[in-house]
Image (cartoon, rainbow, N blue to C red; front, side, top):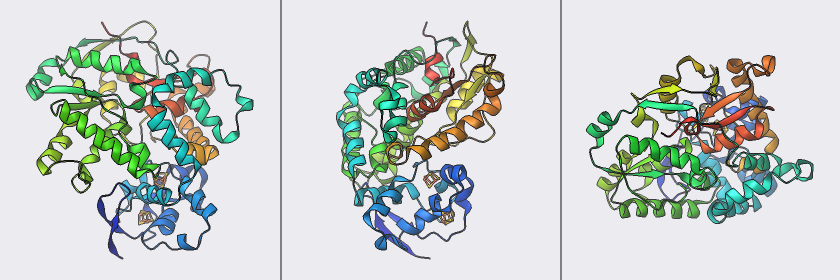
Length: 412
Ligand code: SF4
Ligand code: SF4
């Protein structure tokens, strides 16, 4: 076993250990579970891209590019790995070392085209699916899923807000909402609902000019762009008076929280105190709402499936809040399957992404039963991650409704 220092894709220094081939990671890797193919497993990637670089040096460029495309960056393997092998990081580094047109596309999409996502989502609705090259078919469907008005009706009225608990914890501390690329673009309804909830908690809302959290750029192998996004966000936070940063996308939350693991090495923060303040400032919205009560109005379905995002916190705070508000209406599959989004993997291996997505819907069907009684119980699924909303919308069975949980909140 070696314990080397290696430069991470975003510039920090992390100890890096070799894979010992124990296979613990196989239990949760969505790609391996969907295909049973060892070459897609985390340990195959660890061998080829880890510190030992078993054979990456001998692979040709096409093979390396293929390998670099085959990871959803869900991070499930890392949670089980006794060696702490971070596969998404290894793959991100491989992607950075072997850039291709997919990264270029992803970079344009995230850093240049975000203001036009609403327009693109509307335009995507008019593109006939048969005319779309197979490599872009799933991405196009996901794009359609971002259209405003394609989400769910608001039918849940919050009848009591835990404002006193919020005041005791945060008093008058300023609060800024981190909307992420989707909430600040094509799904502005999420941003409005989040602000409605925070205003009802009597939060002292302030504006902050945040950009993309940067995590999707990092895993795509675009470390300079990730770094620029992180710096812009920390600067915006400082400019807003170092407020509490409230998120409502699991991937944004994870991405922002990670600033505090390498931020000092990367020069993101002035000192350890500022980094600790950031770490204590980034929070999902849902824990702030714990203790709320609600009433379901007309249009509330009898059964609602919950999709647990891979990037959610271990306690799945969104599910905890919603199950308190919705009771037995909300059902979560025993096995939380990955939706198959995977960022850049949508472009690299759409068929695998769809295969993983099919497994996710099979899991949801165990609680919704829409394949047996679709006309009685149409699939109705909520989640708490913008990438999952896109992917689930792209892969949903006919008639199913998919949305972020904020879409069912009815503002007074
Ligand atoms: S990050 Fe996810 S998809 Fe990639 S190897 Fe690990 S478990 Fe598999
Ligand atoms: S759990 Fe870690 S050490 Fe074990 S096979 Fe997977 S990557 Fe290798």
